[in-house]
Length: 624
Picture 1 (cartoon, rainbow, N blue to C red):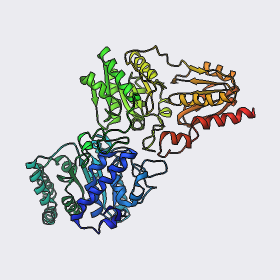
Picture 2: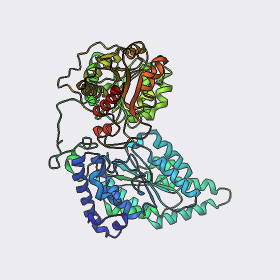
Picture 3: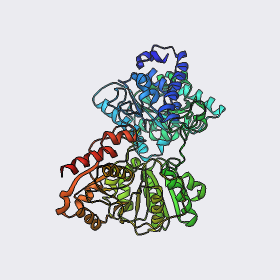
Picture 4: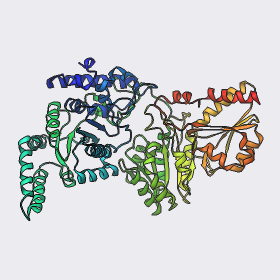
């Protein structure tokens, strides 16, 4: 059937009894493509029936279907005219792994970070009502996203305003026992039915008209309806916030979902929340058994679920996790904090070594930073590991609670720079411009696993203020790694990798190898290049940087970040004005959001690969 579904209008032509079979076809399609491309598999498999039901009941794109995070939108993309391009998902020039306005009218908003759907939904509903339009607004949010304060801020306003919208709470962490499930299903059918809702609405309208005591009676009657339901179902929190609660219901019962969505859609003039229970990875056993492994996955063998390529090298995240686990045994004040990314940041190693000092605070980056600031001010040594793209959510906490108090928090900025296939919402290109402008921070950038290890050992002993360490997504280039061995690290000390008077390249992090490769290409042409691994973003050794520049005919800076606010701009502002004219170029990413594609493809596209850099320098060297 799937080949004939070119839009949701085609879906609506099917009979309800055919929707289960269609869901299985969609699952097979997702597994087939993601096994080759990699992507967010488990979460997308868990919402296939929900997605089919949503597009069967609602009239998109007139009705607005708003996904939270967006990495579970694969079935949505397939059903909204993108099945023929689904093989290109997360590929250079292909469709995005997340909803994008520019890609389809069925994607009303760009989303990639969690907990935005409810704020977007109430904004859409308020705008609709002011403009006297008439369409449905549906937000889908996962149970994990509700740990974010932003989601509760939105819920508070939704309950207060009571605009007509529907929230789908996708709960994939708990199952419903048979008895509770049966009772809940019966009650949800009852309270979503037309007769019950007509009675409820009419009785409350009549109550409000009673002179003198009407308002008080109305309030008590509302509380009665909510309390009656609250005895039997776990939705009292939402009822207290002012939302009508329905559920929990089976998120894989497509007939039940279509029936419930159709009924709830007809309950007007209030916000509703439908609590569904789903299984992450549904329909593909390896993903069902290990949903965390298949949350974000590379290419894999469909038959076994095993990765197609297994590297003998550790990732930078694993280096950080192993080193912190080692440090936790040396110093009992060491703590580790993550925001729902225990596996991605490698902190599962720390949890095994010191479970009583490991904290996963959920999707709550702001809280993670301030929590760590309090621990640091109280004599503990907290290491907070957060992806660069998610650290953006806690800028005020970094300034207000860490920087101003000079709290000795140690922040590990994972996935710094270009990350590749997930695109704009996941690249870590802003951290340099953010952190370097906050007073009191020491800011470091390793280019090898050993340098990262040494910086972590240094951070442990540094208690005069906060330390931030940025490192890329990817693997180290050494087969042997020892977390307990370290060399003394001195912040600000330059690491000169090669010497030559023709040109100097100042670089850091994962661009160091690129700089050395460009140096090798230029050496073949008879030019000698100085390559300087800065290692430290802040403080900079400006005197020695100036000394190197004075010896060189000209220099460039090279970084895996935005040029605006980056290390190149920092150096040029700090050096003596009379040598600034020697700066040929500050190389990095321009003032635009960088699309998705593999890391190598993106570096080539923006001429930040070794060959492009060497050609640019060769042209100038020959000219001069």
